Length: 328
Image 1 (cartoon, rainbow, N blue to C red):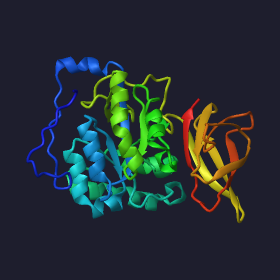
Image 2: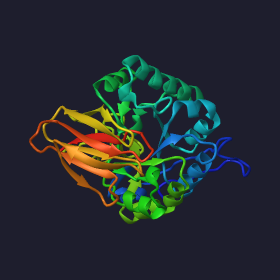
Image 3: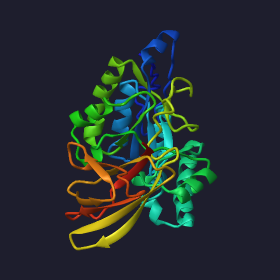
């Protein structure tokens, strides 16, 4: 085992505080020869699920980064401390989980600052990592992040747990992780928690380990901050020189248009993920490709510039899809 857990007190519960010691030995180094990946869980802490999630992770020798919603952290400070005591890293996921790119700089500042304060109050330390809700970011938001000393973390693999993915599908998604990459999962789904033992087994089979996300690079590295990192040829989505800014277009009773402006590069790949039962029914000024579910569109330039658009048939859900960008 890469890490050993020391549980103090038979009656100790995670909500009350779980004391853990993570130990490594020289013989463990070979276990991580395949590299490190970042397991991340958004939208916690939640009284109904966080303790079960932490139990599943620790019992399988895994550590992860918890991107907490500020108001959840404020209302459940014992669970934030339980995350910390269980050896997890804690990140900022905004105060109310809004579409931050639709807010003013002052509103962005408030969303991030209040969350920093709530988590610091619970744990004694302010987060150094930030995940923008829906993966939506722009230059203004990144400026606010920089002022607060935060590193933006998007993801390489979307587990689709928020979109009704089964446990088997979540495990399959995690199986695609490569050295240095990060997967998006969430705190509040039973299917996600049930996937943890199989995710752990798959990583062991590939000589890979769950690591921390480096505040310097936003990539997964060894828990002590060392170890292999993703080669420069594989920049993180939303990082590097690529920024995707989403803006509203025309709206109708059953559908709405969105426009995406890409800056920083002329060679880009933008991933757009809609929430079922939404469907993208039209696109323009780009070359789209689809995954097997039809919910994830990958758009590339087609010679018509760096702005493209699409139409979402919302089927009752008007939430904007998640949009992330990486250099192609």
